[in-house]
Length: 457
Image (cartoon, rainbow, N blue to C red; front, top):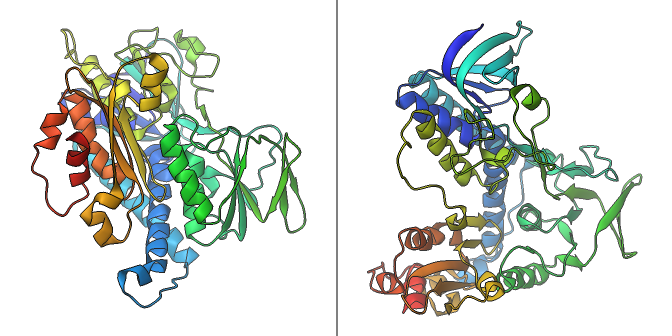
């Protein structure tokens, strides 16, 4: 039998880091195994690098609109090596900060890979050729995340046909880019590369971008894309990619095809469950490869938990972090009585396009489909003084409330700083606040947040 520990965490992403940190603070002996960097894919390939590049693109776009604010015309170019270094610097600083925090709390961090060798036995293979070691764990958290889905017809070369993880930054700024996939990741890349100067085409398999979002929200983004020169191929499903000497051609199932210098695939992700030894531990896996969990994030084996993308719940770093915290508390016996479980329906999400999009809680279209009575109020950014001052009045604030009680049930925001403003509505939804509570809040003037109060009136 190997070394005995209270908790072994496999995967150092948002769920794993938060679980390790919380459990250590509560007095547990914790071992965290991560093969890449602390922070996981969120830091290395997904959230952080994409938003860093989007921030650069947003500044370029704003500079190009400088004349509207009374400035001389500005035409900034993109220094790709400097942009790449900026992304790497941010990743490194976050990884160092998280590592220092965990080590200061007594977490034993092992760089390497791990798999289950039995219900309580974890086999860890450190990097560098060291012999595998086994640990006997009271509890195990599986938080290995996911990776981009690549269909059989896509021949990825990392130069002209890319997955999302090869685009932070890309080998070069594409002259002409085809983005395949119109979900959250796809539209963010469309915005990013259009801002950086690429001609962009988007293959949309449905009849609207963001098929899971409010149609009015999706329509606002489509309008902005078209105004910025993005070509939308609606109702087209990519089926093949041909690489030529200097061009790449994407073929669609309706006969349409589009030629470009680069193709970027954004068609979902696959849970990283292979090689985890789930059979040896008796852990069930869904047909999609996820590990189904209950409200405590427990698998069918009670002392083995799953968090983050692997759990099949909302694939958001914020949700994964909350899961990690709840898992650690449950491992340490703090949830032996009634407590607040994670309510995934109240998780706020944001899309960092231009304009930004954010939502939380019950959506208007969802309520309509359920036959639920709601009250919907909407205020355009064009009616907000701060939006006019900043020279960007695109978008709106929409609130969904219960007509009988006035309780805020949800909301959507399209416009500048939507990702920040949605936090106010998220708080209202979680705390069961009423629209009157927002309407009577004394916000700063002039501020974009005033649109929330106006929508609540």
